[in-house]
Image 1 (cartoon, rainbow, N blue to C red):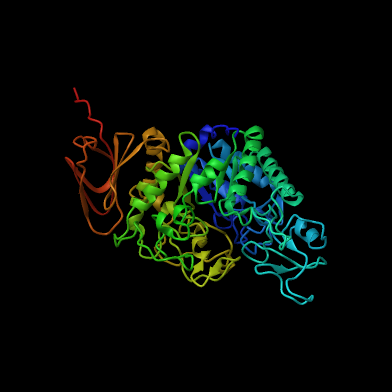
Image 2: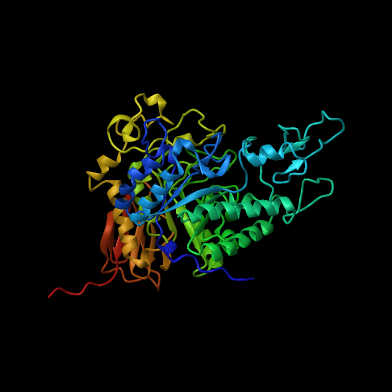
Length: 549
């Protein structure tokens, strides 16, 4: 197999920041965020130290699933502005050393996309997955399970992804079956046309200065692909094209299994609350506490970053080690998000603002690429009980709206998010708490979470040993969680409410006698004994200091 080009060099130092565009900043007072609003807030990101931004889908859409139902991949949604507004955002970000990535919805479109409306009238069009005859006898027989009756002149039914308004693009089936003729092979004309379309879409936006894509549900393209063999082949083909056409562009997978997705062609993949060796259960996630957004049917587990102190980082550490062993040096990266638009924020349920410093101390010193979800840097809360908004509700206990509320900039009207006159005109309601955190208040307070996140990002960027490539040695996998980066930086994290103590007495433990605190609160290092108060964290330099003259 032809090897991939090395990942772009800039990616190893990336600190990602995810922007949900309709909730970040509204420049025109219509209650919905937009490109100009983001541009006007770029100085916040530059001050924070962020150098890579990815935007949730901003393409034309009827917004039945918040933009993940695309009706035109080559046009931006008017709610966000114009192509020129996006170009200005990209240019202004570049001036500040920030790259911008778009969200590519590769597996399906809106049922209003011209591709689909044409396919719904043409039995010879195979861009989507169609069965042209119903099961059973007679024209009134129901379509096969999972299919939706055709809305056009074409007989039969189509296969959707997720909502009925999101018809699945046809990338083929790993296993064909003569009894199910809609199972076309991945190299059939329809699937090949869709592969070509992905190249055209990526080429268009990369040619305009975008830095890459986060790919939505990247593992879902080829159907009935148990080992993801055919899906991996698809992305390998696209990566080789990308290496030749746009070698500095990056592909981020929403796959959830870096050991599979990175060798297949992605530059990095997110460790999320799903996917990987614990498929179907959130054991690998250190954040997920089944509060806020939730995936109905998951078994309950104990969360490490909750005040009760019943969890363990071991499953995460083991899964991370397995992934990096497969990826190898220089092959790509694992990314670790604080949250995203689909699952709950760090500040949710029993977890409160006082726990967040320990969470960021871990995220920004572990050898993964950090991804900060907008607002997490000030500790914005997940807001329960919001109405279904643009498809936010996915189940009885799974409403994503609480993670998508407007960014809280200051104490002005609508928290500085929008100049719209009536709060009920906002895309989503604001956090109603009178003490909700804001950027302005935390900028003015050097002891705030915002300033801590900024200092940790600066420390990470100034210290290669704390970055994605530095070594890590775990000294204690429990409370407190203790590890050493690059042989010289000790990190201690205790996210539970009660104190914890451990002794670093393994034979290969670095000498902690000269531990010097770089950042921290509530951690004491006395010889090889490490004591951490509740919700404590610390980053220490173990290098002996030269005596002053």
